[in-house]
Length: 274
Image (cartoon, rainbow, N blue to C red; front, side, top):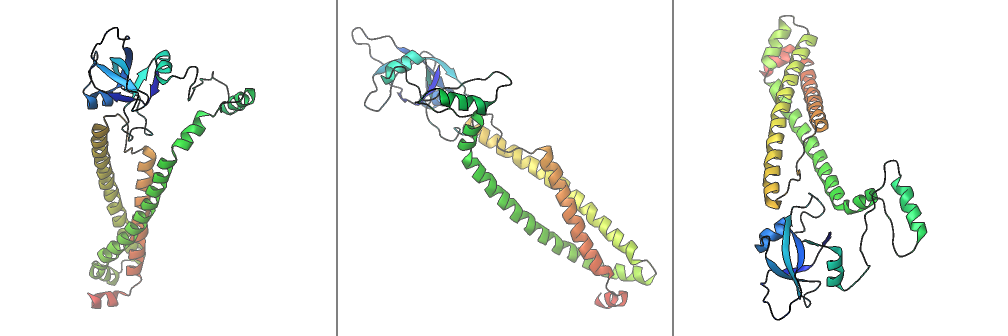
């Protein structure tokens, strides 16, 4: 069986004289749903628009493996036995691609180089190289998302610092009173920093919950839209650890700057400003 892109029309076949037997084909699930095909239906297929002449019977409806490289194309896909495909295309002993499975321990680069030295007319590539070439679009999208993430983190850090400065500024009367009764600046600084750390932890938990909810909604929508089991939004433990550490770091940094600015101000000046 081989996956091919052929023109497929769901036209009924009218028997006329001694018609050749219908070719058995397997139709991809989404294609079958779009054309309203079921097992046992007869259609006409061809290699081009002016060669829709071969009768084919739907022998099976299959669900392909989830592939992010082809999921958005929406092309109709069918599978045929190789002899039927050769006859339909009018090209015998010709293929576009051949997949070679290696035994454990073999190096794909070495095998590809050896095959390329054997004969002309084809080119062998390791599967990782093919996957890398076909994933250029996803790499560009990934870099774009990274740039957006960096801008978002910088903007959120500035916003967080402004919020912490405002929150700490509201505590100037309390800070002035503590300083006047003899509480050391180090103690006040530690209390304000602990409060900033607590706020950062709560924010991290809320942000993680929001990310999980958004990722779940994204997966449910696109899996239903494309009729696939692909994961479109994945939150890994590494992402969770990095996000929590970054949140705590930014929260502590913003709290430390705001607290240090407050405790360095003389208590009488804080009192007058209050």
